[in-house]
Length: 442
Image 1: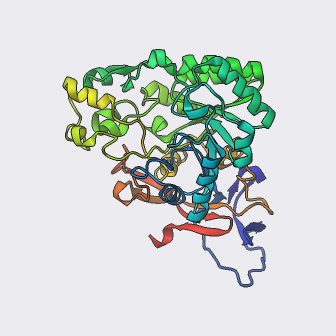
Image 2: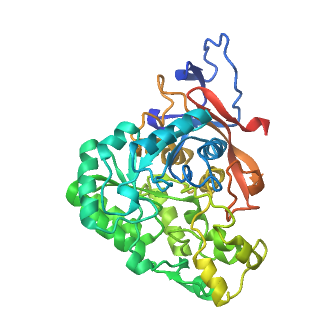
Image 3: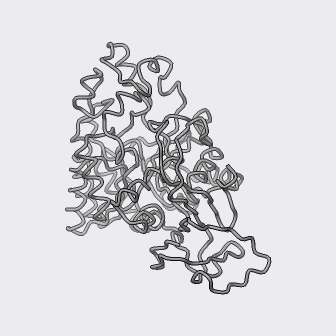
């Protein structure tokens, strides 16, 4: 059992009763098991239910990509007891009515738990703020215009003032659009080889610099989403030394793949921010090790083949080959393919690779994938302490498996990890004492 919040890391027996942790005892200690269902977790890790602070469930508005039901099933299969669903739905989650709709659909799913993320501005337009207090009352626990940066510094500053008074954080998509210019891939050799538009490496840290200066001035809590560059990490470290209340996340695709993945996977390796270079990956690994990175988030972004332009581009890309220079028309189509990859069902396996390579200890992984996201979302979760809600993930760290997109519970298949062999997987996900995923039956 690994529970950093309780400073527990060892062999324990755990008893759940009425949806709560009723007892935690050293293995072999007598626990009253009258009428209990026994789960043999030998060889596995029992950890607090994993929490993903950044997913896109596309509901309402895009049922061809994902629904709350399919997204929460995919989350549970990935070991996640809770996910925070971003606001870029249609309509945008900028009103209590949409927040309540999301929570109602999640309740009907009887699966992983959904935490709604409210937009910061109406319609994600970056102009008029939402009614922050009303959104909190409806159930929002984080604010973000994710996918779109808040370009107007005054709008962001006012939002931080209000959210600070309410006690919640703002998650920031950091992109200076004057520099990124709608680029398709990280500006560099791969983009040039394919003949597609480049996304300036400086676009992310330039906006991080501005927003952290605002955060330092306000004292508000901010969260930097999907950090992808070494320069951004250095700015986060410097801001913390100056007293900024800043947390940050990284994604498995950014700490696993570099920009060359686009040569094989094409649009399924296209996201915002884009995959970077090997130096940036090394910097992400170092920041995970030294604690600069607070959490791992999937940025689960399901897309249908039409949105990814796979009918026009699929012939150029695929496993076992690398694409050459694209003609102008194909390069334009590539540029307009949707950004993002699915991640709920591969995140844990990819993150466990950091453990297997001795880059981090298992307890550090649990901090990044449960305890710290719980703190960001202001949830009483991320622990297996007696009395806590029984959100539990059972992980077999040595289970070897192959990523097979056709078996995903998500509606979408847009992944650059198809065919990859991974080691470690969730075999049981429990939410409030109820088994919502049982991989032992697979």
